Image (cartoon, rainbow, N blue to C red; front, top):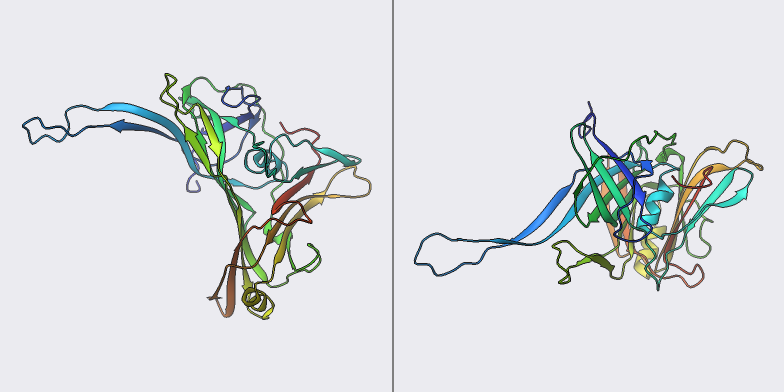
Length: 326
């Protein structure tokens, strides 16, 4: 059995209509993760004429962390995760026959991310975690494997209850790096294919912060968001000085990572499934030389910067055949 996979363990999830109000799961969610129920305790050190350090302690606050969750990206699941990490309330738009497009452009001045109730269970026990927020997302493009979502979540509390029954496995299609094209441009995004990109990563931290008011509970009653940005990274074969020159000159870069899949059945004109990330930066922050086997490489990294033409500093578009996301 591959490391990290445990038989008769599963995850299910449902998007919450009202933040923090537990809902029944609507989907089986394939991923690998573990939960930590974190309870803070206060233990005062007191002068009691004793070498004992502590004589009493009390619980003060609690929350749930689901860190290091791993899911292989699929064209069917990517737009669901995007509701928690990028922009909530996005519906599929019928683009042509049987084709639905989900467009996620982050909202600068409104907190519209969705929250979820996650259900984690084994064959002997089950829990629900309401008010789950998408804390951190890493989208990794690595040659030789599907595109990977590495995710951290925060949840309000753990509730012991039976899992939602009778949910069915869903057909999904993996998003692979072999069918991913990288573009790096100065003017119009998606114009210039960067043939020397070896791998890439996008890292998003939504900067959630739990709030613990005096309301008779030890868990957070809400989470608030601070400002956020994406860090874009690519490793390139050092066979040209184009990106080095852009780094030294502080030239703005526009990067697109577009992955395509199979043609959607019944689409007219014929349209493949796809996932496209657009990323805008005022310039690369770092440029590090290295080696991969017998070739010289350079690793570039930059922070997303608002682009007035695009109306965002980054965005995501998913195309599949789902009129709704279960």
